[in-house]
Structures are given as structure tokens and as C-alpha cells.
Image 1: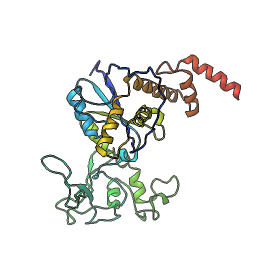
Image 2: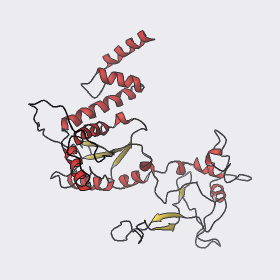
Image 3: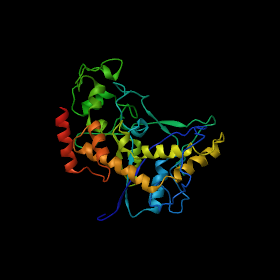
Image 4: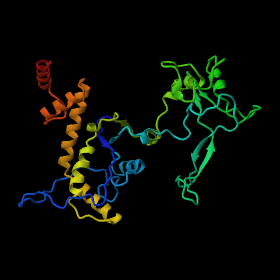
Length: 328
């Protein structure tokens, strides 16, 4: 929507331990709590009754945004954790596929309540799962390719096998193994069609499978971004954790879980919005530095030199070049 306000929502996680406290802190004797007018800060409803800050769930976050902030464009930003890259259970994957037809190749998907859509658990507390057919693939022209034989085929319902799937895509798999070695990584370096599994792995529809997280967000109309790995400086919530934990450690310790949860929430609520904005501005400076081609050490230098804006001025980059020439 033209002119629509865009809001970026960052996700991150942290762990708070019991008895992780300092008994004493240094403060000025005249220091008093200073109130700040709040804008967004942590994601919650306007009346503060709904929040996604304690135990984050993407669905909860999207519910709050849809309900209370429907007139804005929201972009959810996540770190590159392995859990965020998890694919849907039914997503296509070449791993564990059989070379030939099989009546036992299926994927396990969670059993959900048909009315509520919630996961169903067994008497032992474990998630119930059932076997189902893997999702269909796509030919190079975009049309759908079924991985299981159709109803009228003499092998109806069975998995076609990697050889048949690749033959339907125009590949000659004569003499090719299902996998080069015991592990997928045993393929020759740089090879793309050395075995059935490697060939499928490099097919566009296999390579472009989106994560379950991205699929859920896109289905509800939300854009999603993933931060690069090992770059915590790009997520300003990392600094928020430091601020919150410093406050948390000054509060009375306890062994009660409910008391600790209240203490964490109290510490989260006390971080000023102005402080969060400063942390966000610092993260934006790092992003701008990387966008301009600087490495991590260089980005840290310019971020320290210029703290007043989200982007780095050209004059500062020129100064950086001059100092770099002196050092070299």
C-alpha cells in the first residue's frame, strides 16, 4: 500500500538464571527513576494485556500485529538459528529417498486437531505423528511433478524412486548410484550430477524450499528477513539483553519459577524506549558499513567514530581511508 508505514520487528532469545544476581550496585545517592514516553518498544497490545516477549511464538506475534496494528506493513526479522531454518515436515528433500520404487517411503507429519489445528499429544506426552506422502515437486517449466504413482498405476501410491523422478525431468541416470558414499558429503568436490541424490539436491525446486517459519509468515501476509550468521551486532536486541540482565541482577533473587518470571518481566519493562532506539541506531550503522563494503573490524571503527545517525557520512569514510593508508 502506497505511503504505508513500515515497522521492523526483531526476534531474539536469551536465558535468565536463578540466583544470577549482584548483591550491591553503584548508584548516585540522588538518582531517581526517570519516566519515558513509550512508542512501540517490546511487541504488545496497546493495553499491554497481550505480549510476545516472555515466550516468543511467531503466531502470537502475528496475532497481535493483525489485531492491533493492521494498517501498517510489518517485517519480522529473525536470526539465522538452525531452528528458524527448519523445513516443513512434508517439504521435498532428496535425503533418505530410495533409488527405486518403494511402498514404505513417506514423511512423518504431526497429527493436529481438525477443529483447533493444535498439535495432538499421546498419553506419554509425546507429539503424535502420522505417515503422509511427501509434497510434489516442480518440473523446470513450473508444472507439478508427482513423486508417487497415480491411482490407476499397478504401483499405485508407491514412491517412484529417484531414478524415475530424474528420468521424468529428462536426465539419463544409467549407471548412477543413489549416493556416492555413506554420507552426502562424500560426493566429488564441485560435482552436481555424480549421483541421484546430488542431482536432485541441485534441482531448483529442491534448492528453493522455504523454511516452515517463512511459510507460516508469508501465508499470513508478513514479510520475513533472516540476519546473517555470527553477526549479533546487527540485532539490537542483543544489547537490550545486556541492559535487562544488568537490571535483573539487582532485583531480589528467588528459587520460585513464578517469581523469577515476574522479575524478568519487570526488568524487560524498565528498559527505556530511548535506550532501545540508541541500540537500534548502532545496529543500523553496522548495516550501513557492511553495505558500503567494510569488514567487521572496519565497521566497528566507523561505528565508534560516528554515533549520531543510522548511516555513515562520506566524510568519515574518507577519514577512514586516510588513516588506513597511514597504517599500511
